[in-house]
Image (cartoon, rainbow, N blue to C red):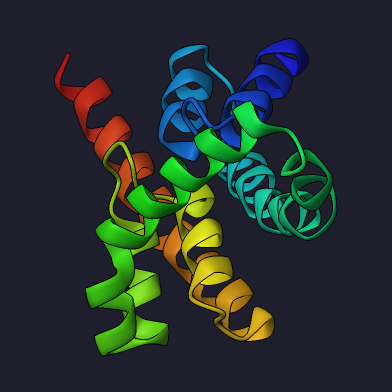
Length: 151
């Protein structure tokens, strides 16, 4: 059980799935439904400060390399294009909505990048991401529990 809980947490911190994958994985492996929710949610929240550290420190150093700079600019343009109008128009609430959508391409990674690019206050961006992650996690958690009861 501990191993499955750790794997759920790793999925939740991973850009390949976040809590959208960690929660269903943990529940499907028989981990306590409340424990898996808490661990996956907290692991997903941890992404925000890690991404900010990366963007503020590591990213600046890596931008000196041409191949990285090209990739980073494309990623930033994609994140900005997909979020700019909604987040600029609705601000804090727009960021919450964007992060809470439990679909690929949204979530705390994209939300953090967007808030960094759009220069949203870090404190507001953190809380918007936390709330968005929570709502997304509840949606995924409830959907997984309902789906597993149906099967």
